[in-house]
Image (cartoon, rainbow, N blue to C red; front, side, top):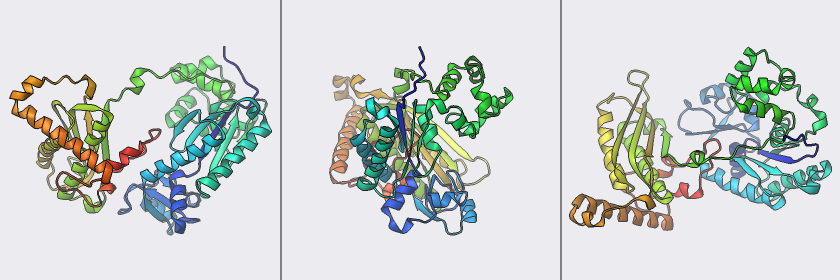
Length: 431
């Protein structure tokens, strides 16, 4: 049975302008300045992946093209993203929060939800706890790492509360205050309602939060075309809604890959090919660490020119492998095929993907057949050599030993990226 709690059961901690704040913490000359974090600093034809609050004051936000951002703010400072630093600070922040309260769910690189227990659910105690967390982050992680904290009867409302005051906010929403505390919000202000859902609600005659509040929960299910609409309605009303359990299909790994948008200087074919090699080696190295073999390799290329073709993609099926040399050979063949298409066009983006993954403990090599098969013996030699390279690079640093020519500096073209809720493992930044 669904229960409408009166106690404050959840705290939601949201780090403000996280990527830009980390850069301001690490680089004092950026503090108090409008800053945009970008995929590459070599061109204005890219977009901001984060903006400091000083930049947001000019209307710059995530997704703003840099040439437009410079028009809005001529003094804008751009810094290339350093995802390894953001992951490092993420772990430091989580460690600090865990000193004060257990982490119930890490929701993303910059958001975490914590369940309040016992006397923590009392309003004054919850507020005091939130202030200790803020002070702990400032003292032990960084003064420029600000966070907004929301406290409410359920996790959804705690996130909404945290969004009400930014930056460095602390907001409490109690059940008896609903819906009045929320009526000034638009439907798009609620986490989970995007442009398409807003349009669907509008078509159903729901244009304000008050309209939605007064809706029958079964009607919300109908608008969503799923039970998620009903769950959303109850969450907004303060109900503690249990999350559906994850299934094996949600946790099964299907692909391993990497992608990179090239800076203009790296877009000529000969340089772009080196980036493709580095991305391939990184993906295969990561696959070995995770304990998989792959039987498909996919190469995707997007060209700089606006003419035809604008992109190229092809894949190759091969006997399950996990060594660098096999996949570099496949890359070479695909690259030659690609070069016969739009062979004068510069390359803007490269993506590689390994799929058809098989756990290595499921592989059953025929040892006796391998003794008489020179190709199998060659693969075994390449497997051993690739593993030896992994050991050397882990011990002495990224790309201490490499296969062939690679772009320099290599790390700029192979760093792991933080995608929505996926937080890269630290090991990925050393592959």
